[in-house]
Image (cartoon, rainbow, N blue to C red; front, side):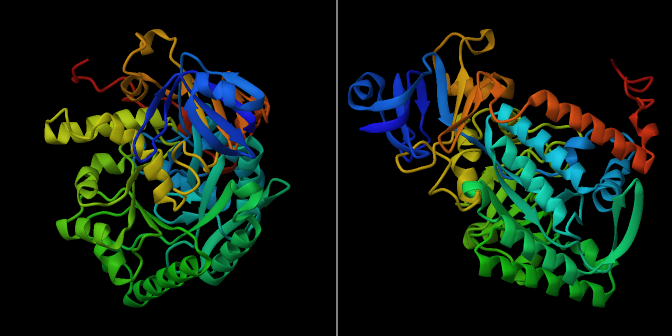
Length: 481
């Protein structure tokens, strides 16, 4: 057999249906896809490859998948986070009125580099954040984001959509240091999203894909909005959902809890191509609805929502639902390190049940590999190491004190590794991280650009005062140390 690349040695965690772990295994890659897996000694004899990579003493596993995060957050993380809703307010102002395309390009490169360094080969990024903040007034913002990600080389599902009714919403553009505000309608935002789909869905050899989003409708929205505005919001949600179905796109929503899935079901928003995030404090009938409709769930155990309530991820999986893992990164206080979120998920649910056997180690790895792929409708392409799938492969060098001794490698990978242990990343057969360094981009340049854009953003919104340590940073007097 002829191959472009042959990986030899190491323990290969395949995440295939049999969950095989190949000791001293090998993977052959041709035209960006896996063409063979097996014993290293045998495949050395049967495979002729232009490049042989020896990953002895490494764990080799599928690229990690982060099914929920936010574009833009990388440049505003921690700023104002101690001031009640101040961080959310900053996001709202920045994302709608203080972020030129260069902001989105620079932040995308930084966030994609962070994911790459942590072994995250595929990630969802909502083009904005908060409850209803999307930078979809014009297509150039999403275009800048997509260009930035594609330069780094990771895969991204970019979620775009309108803000919640009522409209118009006020947006702003920056030219020559001056901001110009203008009203934006639902129709304009929908048209922008349709243009983004035309321009970017499936771009860069399929590494960039687009999902559609409409903000969640919850009890407080029906209570606080006028009947006309609430009805308009329901109609808009149905329009966006219909367009996603027509185009074969994932439909996603950010921030479900306490009855909102019932509302989504009544509007016809659920289904196997729907991905709902957070989903805290669900009622039993909502868990049953998720399973019955094959709706996918993005569980974010490190997010603030998981402090305010509990996502019944284990109960939904027991009911047959697909639950994948998200970071909700990279702000205000969390990173895109999926090892951190795997470990957090185990402790989160084990603490709830006071049972250390809840959420087995292998299951959380499943949640950010093959289940992540299923949540995005891409299980036929990524999420496991199998013949015919894209060669999205990550390695961790186990020769580190916190990962030794070299036994029970699957346990050690999930329980003890962190994102900084990732040594090599292959995406679509391309080595995009080699010995811990990105191969496509200059990391120092990305970080310098990020620092400069963050400073400009702070100046635009006058947030210099939000950078100081809060009075309770070291704890309040009277608290135990």
